Image (tube, rainbow, N blue to C red):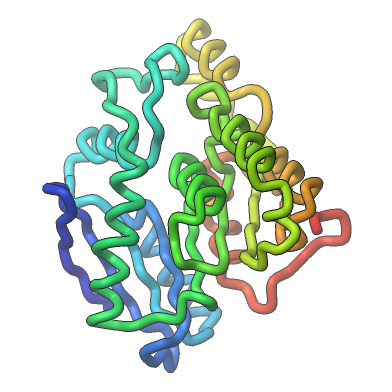
Length: 268
């Protein structure tokens, strides 16, 4: 049965959903699902079908009103960015950004201790999944070693955010620690959608701005850069028939698949 609780950190509340899959026992693996408000039902369905013992841990937000949740999501998953660096959704006020360090702090200092007390997990066999802005957060957590997790999965991560600031952070990290990728045993999987959603409902000027902001390097470029620097456990996949939105279900299937599948032409 699914359990749900609300945890607070630095005055902010989060929804946490737990579901034991198969014969999971304490100190077994966990699968962390970000944006659980949107994706936990799908993740639970796929995980139950796949059947491997695991603790499914969903992290969501307590806001039930969609607009409030979207605005909060912009804050929780991003670094600080000016409004000129991203396209605003029609009808939404300007979101506050820059809370990703606080969210990482919640995962490290509130969620992990909660799990250690209620349902201890094996970090060395646990994994985390994020899509879009949550995928951006997953890549940044991998880069900064923010979480005691061994496997990271980013589905169409928003590498474009803040004028591709993450790519700059990657290059800075590799320059500072050039030998680190070769000895890193954590695993990173990155998926990219092959089709762009036309967003025909947007006015031409807004659609052009959206396309300009999101052009340039993507998640596969991030993974390729890491692999070229010597990281042996980075895999990138292009889903040619999927859009940013439609890729979530196939991405979750791959996330839960056993054993991990690597196509002939994918890294590593």
